[in-house]
Length: 178
Image (cartoon, rainbow, N blue to C red; front, side, top):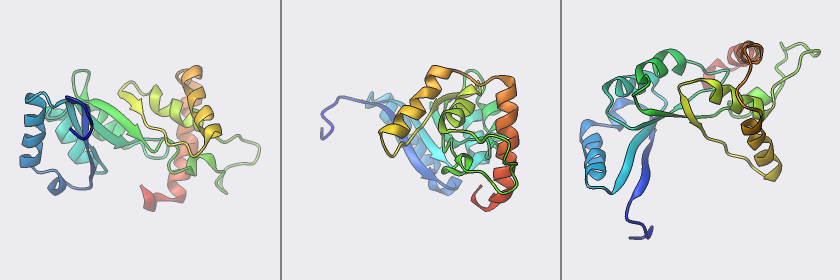
């Protein structure tokens, strides 16, 4: 009633750090909301890729939100293949790896470019398993840069390899945040 709507399109349960944060009783309650027509789709956001992969394989949810970027690609093996073509839709977030993919690491040669935000979003959206990539611009300029990703379309094979190489360097520099 407070939202002045008859239903919610997607109910996304956020911040699941471990399976205990998303017990079967909670999942059942979300399914009941969907069955009652109060929500059209249910999902969750998790930092636990193995758990997200299990839920994807079980087809328990309509949507899964997982971290995915050039420096953090574990979802390519642990979640995406288990979702398959008919599985839950995938929302990726942290495409710029908390802006770390927008800064030149010391190990990266000065004569080589670094990605911009649009390239980071294009990297995430270029993966066939990713349906949506969240963006959180701080100002109008960042919003415009992020939207350029949609105009430019998917990355080329060469651009994907560049992003993977750059992402590896960023990952090695700050593995603690992965």
